[in-house]
Image 1 (cartoon, rainbow, N blue to C red):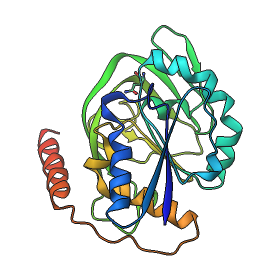
Image 2 (cartoon, protein in one colour; image 1 turned 45 degrees about the horizontal axis):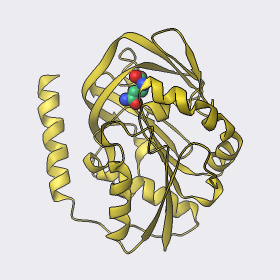
Image 3 (tube, rainbow, N blue to C red; image 1 turned 180 degrees about the horizontal axis):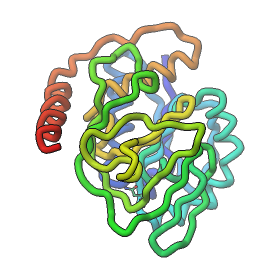
Length: 250
Ligand SMILES: NC(=O)CC[C@H](N)C(=O)O
């Protein structure tokens, strides 16, 4: 079996090594005998969203977000269609913001978003920076590997993201700021689209989430299979240690 994984704007949205999410998905495929077909695409390059299984969009600075917005807007219809068809998307920070309605930067200028997620972002006076522990919403994150109900990482953003009526957070912040540092929410899930502020990279620190994305992508293919368990003892130890250390500080 092959899984098509696309890294969109790897040259512009790759803050804090977010490409590690692609490496993690690819490795966890290979360790199970699934062939990952990795595609990278940036400004002006053609993409077939319906032909891919997982789309990844990383984080970036305000400047880079401004550079790619026109290109991203041109892709709206195709991307929206694929998302409504169940395309699995992981979007981190800036990438997450740009799937929302807009991102208003500290200078008051607004960068339009795709409006696929019912969220909007307004830059605050101070950056939200630091380690984060999130208690995942059961319904939004349950898969075969439910070993952890937590998600860990770090955040560094000026944008504060607010959620509309029809969408709720991916989880509850136990340590750190999350979407906006005000309502204890972090991230969102809409259909198979996951948005989060957590860098780390996210997936090596949360292998259960990597497997959830892979499961969803395989299920969308109509393949009824359970992913083989991997030996994540080191990752699990690191995850549990981070949760324990940070919650002691909370
Ligand atoms: N880490 C990021 O991707 C930052 C996103 C956006 N530039 C902000 O500062 O909020």
